[in-house]
Image (cartoon, rainbow, N blue to C red; front, side):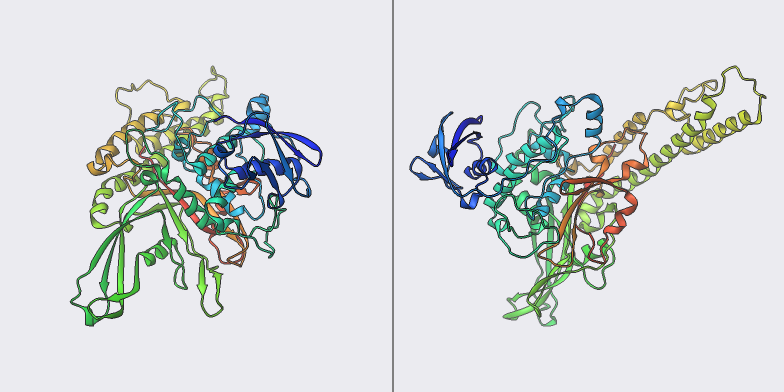
Length: 568
């Protein structure tokens, strides 16, 4: 239902507001607060039959266009307007548009909501999710993701709908946005995120909605959001949901008794769906891979039917399905019984930008993934060699292109050096890739095509056909599953500070997520990252990723988002 225009009266003044019946009543109260300055927790909106409650359905009120609502409550300080007015892309000139599109927008901290902002920014690294949420692209020529239904808006529950609206607005503006509607729904769904605290955060911000909200856990926020995304439709033609296809892994756990007295007890096997993999951190863990292996092989205590008492069991877990997007939770917060408090583990743990998850799988899935995994690793080396050749050829061709075309061959030693450089690049090319079939000896290398190299798209087409032929039949029809077990890091949520219930969260997303490079023209800048510190967005060089390994109170990786490597 489209928003309607209504009036409110407060302290003798009238205001005109938009009321969206599809949003909860609390969202309307926030709009009232923005106009009157009356905090939501001290506000009474009078409606037919009494006072408007946060969970009152609009169908019961049946508001009409032009209807007037009476607002009662003492006004506080009005929220400060943005330093600069919000400007939409369609209102910008060419220069402003180019500058705005070069950097994604940030989200305003609404009072200890950095945990939510960092999580939302990281989830923007999943383009298939934006398609499933019906996010409108700023570029109207952008094509839909595979399996999407173009022109068909999905029917979504409130939180996914608010998330889609927020992501759409982030595509269409270059200014900072305040995710008020999304935050209200998040707190309504999980009241934990509405808890208040009188303690001071390491990143104090004015609380725009009553103030005093406590800091929360970004991993718990991610879990809540993903659970609400469970109703979002998956690819067209499938009965599965989006989360089930693209974000859910399947794991098998085998329990065996460790006590010799229960040696005759048969092992038990169970299967479950997992939305993330945990990296356990202790005094022996220095690398993410070893921490994950610890979480997959551990000792648990359970009731033994054979012994009639609690006993130790060894639990071995292995993946039987790998999703396209794999979340890794760095278990940096642990409960200490001796001080009765949750503390942060600040140990330095290195994480890779490229991750091979084949070792996490059971033998059956491992055998399905290995043919593609091994060939894709070799193909990526060939692609890197082609990139190097194209760069060398382009560099060598630049000075020769500036020389007069009619210059004599022996005009100077400089010309001979340029020719030698070109010949060297061509020789390197010949040792890297075979000559193009049917290419004559008199054909001169094209600088635009990287010397003797063909256009990169042709190589990718052949590589894709070869790799697809290696994909196991059972994986070809599993939409959203990884077919190689190879991943690249695209998103990070970090935690800064020494306390588990305080500190500050920051999001990081790989630059190529927002600006995909052209095939064959990748540069080192494509490997850089964007840092989302609430409303502050900046470029974060790849070389500095190692500073997020931890080891102190500064930002340390807490949630990592890995994306399955594409075949092409």
